[in-house]
Length: 208
Image 1 (cartoon, rainbow, N blue to C red):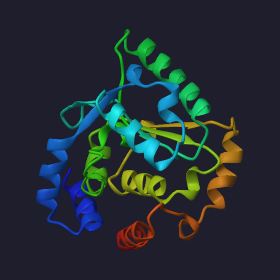
Image 2 (image 1 turned 60 degrees about the vertical axis):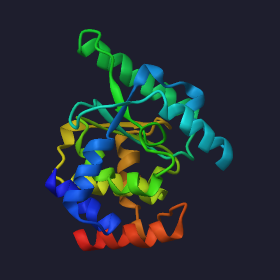
Image 3 (image 1 turned 135 degrees about the horizontal axis):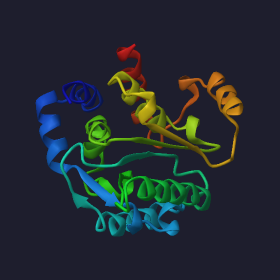
């Protein structure tokens, strides 16, 4: 967790111990069964904010390390397709774990919507608190810098490939996905907030 706290401190410009303390206190999980297809649909800023608060009410506080999956995805990708693939993962998880219902970390459900910047600063800690990284790749996934930051953080913390569940909503073959990754350039990835882009690129460059 200390490595995660260090990355968080670079993102937030704050003391690592304080960031870790805040991350542990604010960590939340969402039961996958509480998620609906409509929750994953892109929307206007106002509608999205109200929907996020409603979704946040369905999540609950949890201890780091108890969440089954960190959901890494782009909100610009098709919600119907993402929900379908997530349902497949949930069904497989329940079958392999004797009916146990999985939990997930989803940004809009698990981040304090009234204090988004502080919550995003603890993102590496939240990622470390999950057993599996669920990568839902789609047409825009590798163009979003926050998605790239999640992958970078996982690798930087020594994440294991075996604990990554890669699900592509377009049905690309492994070879097609490899070609997509081969063309990837972090310098062309975007953020909703320009200031976030500069900060995150600085963190990635410092890490390498």
